[in-house]
Image (cartoon, rainbow, N blue to C red):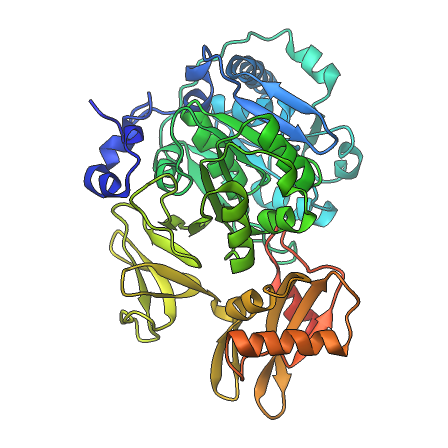
Length: 513
């Protein structure tokens, strides 16, 4: 009998998708299921690597499914020996590595709740999160351990000595958890001063996640998949790690400070066929100039996190021979709009977020909660169970049912009665060949209420002539009223830990100034 993974076409996704079809991809049942078993243990006899860690320093670390299965089993036994019981939290503050996968899967295997933490968090960021989730242990590296001594939980250093200690535990551990038991606490990439509530995922989440895997990143058995996003965040953990491993797919992970030239070389070395990355990653690949030096085997290319500008989208198609497929959603609501990478009957439209996932309902609503006709901007909303849930993002549709992003609700700029999209203005600015990054916000103006101010990272000294070039370009691409009346040339733009441009920080800086 055919499985959902046997279909690749858009028409088949609409015709054959079902919730029961998702469960057929797993060994567990609706009552008993464990993420570690589904992602690792049941694939222990596979010959393909489970994870290829691309380290920024030039090393490649290759881990097999059996390697991770045995390491995580020993760690599960270790946790039990330390008095950790199912439901306790275990924080993991590590880059992708043998230790990271040992700790994450070991915690979930024994029924504890894994809490991945971004390795670049400072003491305040860590303290807020551990006070919120109260983990029994915090697993980290020898380099980070000293700064975490006062964080609260007992710190465990996952070094060679620790692995030697684990050798006394059995390399098998039978995972047995209820499908509805909590498995992961995921914090979004908000500021450390405004800690978002942890999104709490059950073991069952691995099943619903496969909708995004099949249709957002186009995962299919036999792929060689890479995602350079940190597994501390939803994209890197759920879409970049757990989903492909659950299908027995080799995963490429990134460890250390991101280097686009190193990533491009790794795409060739390891013949990855499927990549999903943040828009920022692709922009950095474009700007580094190293892309023409390598050959690529990529068949599917997707992005998420924020809209991708048209120049970078053109670079992707020119370089990899495949269109950039959007995957849109949030940590809280999941993926709801996709571009079906790998589907030869789905036309990817430039700038589009794609169409709803199979069986999904997404609409654009006006302020009164009514559905907007094509071409009219409103708020993107998704139907869940018995009502519409707001995404806090603006968007519109076209006549053929494709969705387009118009920015966060608080990214709209209203000047002299005109409503303008920061996303569209940024896209126009990025068409200048010497602009590397751009962000647009509204700043107070006594006459117009607000005017557009652009913050631009450029490849030459910024001066008045350069400002006029950018302003003229935006006037030509958009309209005469949408150009940035103020332009600041900056060495870099503030970003969230997940790599998205943080316009909120720019607005706060302007208010302070």
